Amino acid sequence: MSRLARFVLVACLAACSGIPILSLPKLIALQGKLLDANPEEFMIAIQADARLAPPTGSSPVLNIDIKPNEEGDYPRVQRMLGMQATGWSPLHKGLAPAPRGRKWLVYSFTPESAAELRRIQATFRDLKGKAKGGSVKLGISQESIAARNPELAGTKWESWLQASRADGFFELWSGALGDLLARAEGSR
Image (cartoon, rainbow, N blue to C red):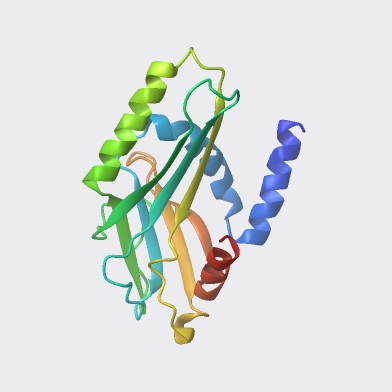
């Protein structure tokens, strides 16, 4: 399949899934940037109804799956990197103040997750030029933050991502909270 055909297919899927079309190039580039990203700058922000109260200790998780093209070329890496809550700031590039009745929930890597990402990055820097390539799949699990309150099911949920401070945040997904929870249930 040609690159253009893949982009069109991804664009069509994104249009149906709540992923903004303008975010597609950033999402595609993210797979390559992850191995060079500064873990301290990687953040996820969620704009939700102000009544939403995430369960204590809940946070998003970045799922990483790095698989070699040829089995045995290097060990497959499958990690779940936890995040921790941090505050919203007007200095966050791309995140305007939340409108009335809404709030920002902002998360960054825990120190342990940042250290694990640095270890993964170092491993793959050492392999550069020695391995025959592979694939990088990223996913962000955020359903643990979402309250399973039927009253909030129809409220808007926006997920934003920052890979570097210089680039700032971009919208990752937008839809109803109920849709987010249904997708999470469907992927299990």
